[in-house]
Length: 319
Ligand code: RIB
Ligand code: CA
Image (cartoon, rainbow, N blue to C red):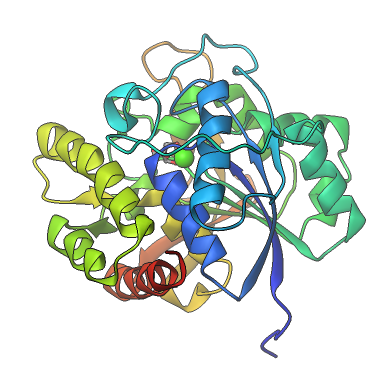
């Protein structure tokens, strides 16, 4: 039975250019009710990520949606950021006015716990940054593992090379110990890996076409993604940029775009050389039961078409 009631979602995020696009997509999608943003270190330092989250909500006309600052650094390893990918302050060439709204006093970890335990079975946690907040939430309230409806994670590189080291994708690399806690928690986890999201790209032409709708949203998207596209062109030789986080978020209400398979996945946390590598046991050699579902195939073209249509609709709303 298709649920008509919007799915309540907590988005754990490190905005970040593609995170910002995920926030815009969440606000443009009636299928979900965005409960709040728990912010985590990652693409940029936590303070910038919090300011970016508030500014993007202000841009999209939802300035008072709760933003909770979470963990400022990984559990154990030294902090890493992705300034080369997302720019010095985390939103590429975009410069948004600072929001007058401040983050809520609640810690991001406590927002995750409170929201999920307030409605057992009803809340989906979407994690599109390093998993530090999610791991500490599980340590503080282990019952989250059975109370959450689903935990969707953008992260990992299962078959292909990583985007941060030859083996590791950024979100997992930035806090591999947190990822190991989450993967062994027993939560119903769906992984949207880099293998898939690297193919989910918007092009300069598509972004420029959004500007026909006018308003500040297309301008922001163009300024933010121009930096992101420069990075992808220089480092991967691509035209366009991978919008990882919106693709992961969309699994909440467009699951028909994905083919999901069960898999046992663990993560390397010891060796400097392989730190953050997600290891999928595709042939069942470990004898371990599956602990995640992962996206094996994704209709990227259909998603991009739907994403751009939602951005156009949002652009027409925000003047
Ligand atoms: O590897 C891509 C992921 O790392 C995305 O979530 C991006 O925003 C960064 O957090
Ligand atoms: Ca992210």
